[in-house]
Length: 312
Image 1 (cartoon, one colour):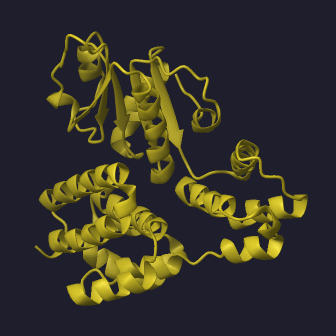
Image 2: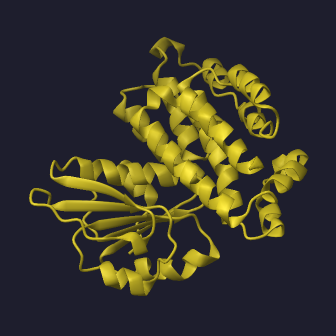
């Protein structure tokens, strides 16, 4: 059955008692948030065990004397089909599958949609109404009272991608109440992502040049996390595209000046390199979750590792 990602974000009372969770869509930062919510809810159970598997074919039931609940996370959906899902349905544990939309996922998503023991959760850029609900909930949770004109300024200035919206709200939460004015909000939320994006376009330069521009643009762990998700977006496009033509169509219009560079980058990637890139993304996300206070270091290492894979 299908469940709205917004319901999971705002309603802590939704029972996550299904066998399968399929987190799809095309907004990776919201997909990550939904996965975090599912994991956090399972971790609240002291007897829960969390395990990552590369593909569904790698699943081996891992029972234990003192552990009752198992949650398996699979971010490589190779081999995911109705036959394999039926094979593991009677096994102990629940499964979270994460995959951005593609032609390959269309058929398998129908299984999750029609299965009563599954949740299908699609994640897309937030619409205006969804942003309003999230912002209202954030203000209420943090006991922040603001005037109507300030509220609508926040709605207009914040990003439609979940991570960047959440990051902006945390910035507002750090302000003293007296400092929450329209003028301050406009300054605080001034969109300047292009500066961070340019770091990715230095990818093929010498390491010392990459490090220099990185240090100039990335001043905090929050900056590093923003850059990671921007780079992840570009990397995921490479991984999911089967041809330069398909990849070219996915490049946003506002990056027309960088289109030639991005296509040349894609042309360097074989299937082997794509697998290495996917593994790098998975390892970096795990590191960022475990030690978020080291995001600046991890993100720089991530950039240099992308370069190493690209030019190898």
